Image 1 (cartoon, helix red, strand yellow):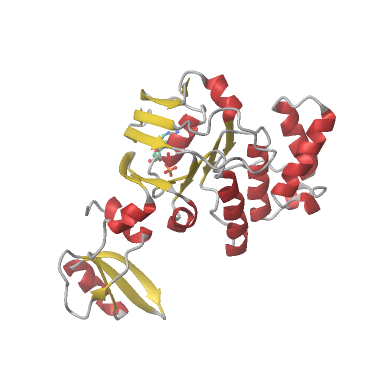
Image 2: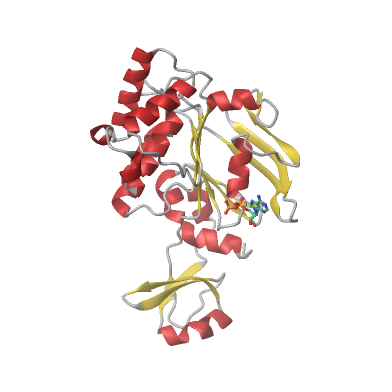
Length: 308
Ligand code: ADP
């Protein structure tokens, strides 16, 4: 799949837009015996790719492996012609990474910090660097607060700064690990818009346990659970696979345990203070249930419960 031509001057293609990442049979067991990755194979094209899984699924292990920060036990990963597990320096030149815990917020301004990071990434010419830092701050909607100390930034501003530092080196691959946790809805939207634009030009891998992140942003996705890939494809195809099998009804709270015993309850969301059940059934369950409209959350829960 080819990406649209880059719109933004500061994201410069240095490899072909048709290049994709191919992960093959990647496995990792930690010394404590936890098998964090179990034969993971994925194909990740240009655009926004969602890696959806509950906490402990193995997402960060996979992200850190692709980001060259830790080694797998077996398997492979290539990015075009680059062997990601062995040619680590080459990967680092192409990579922008926003870890789950960016963590360090020193008492210096956003502008000075970004300038420092750009210098570390090899931008030696101070004039060019200054221009690029200013453009990036504008791009990430931080220009007005560029002189403020990072310590005083809100969660949303910190995440946008995290993206700015990840993008400053013109990455062809951007990895963002659980980036929206803790953001309020407005901040999350601003962050989505920023990521969506970046995803038009490069590969963006977004790891998340938040289903809406994938629904709202990603053209391709995988569901990962206990180190294994349970689904790989488009969100639309995943949802279509549940067509005619999701049923819903509103029930009294006290009846919930009974329904959970009798039905495959996918989810129960409170609507107006009453649980709205989604259940999985090949046949109409009767009992007041109506046909439901499946969504990605239904896909997520049915897959991780092994009901597919
Ligand atoms: P996720 O990012 O999906 O929450 P992780 O990759 O962080 O998942 O973790 C996958 C599993 O590996 C979890 O059971 C976690 O406790 C375990 N794990 C992660 N890092 C380590 C480590 N350094 N040592 C031992 N176990 C780990």
